[in-house]
Image (cartoon, rainbow, N blue to C red; front, side, top):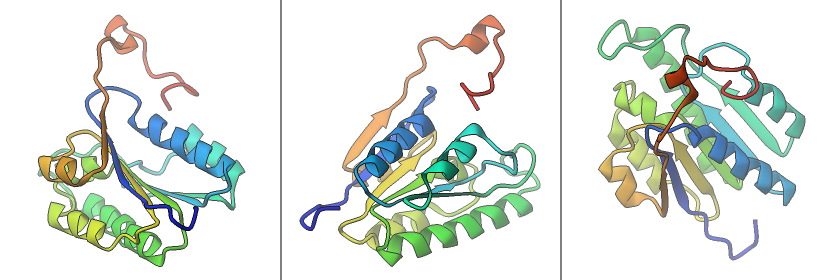
Length: 177
């Protein structure tokens, strides 16, 4: 990014749909301007989502890695594999952010990992202290804590007013996943 560019901390949170979509829209815009974007997805399982397939087309300017164990996480139950995956993802996030090689780093669903207590909040907050000044850091997921809201420069909360699921319409390929 520009020499005098100051990277901010952005948060997309809330119960509504669109947090990851907003972050990926920002990634698309940034790549269009020649910026380097790195996306780390937490708790996304092993499946091949549409965004993984599409973002591969933006390489090498945009890189994406996803981490997560199979199956649903149940708070406080059988968390071993989920914790291991989050730890691997977080170590990778630390490497990418502190390298200073990337203009924008997106930690997708990091707040879900925090809410499920798969990683201590203090470690993620500490990472913000080590962010190079020129790196824009974007964090997504439900339940962003007040500590993160306070630290962020931009916070957008997605609010669900109406959802097709309420009418019995299930998630559709290419739209919700």
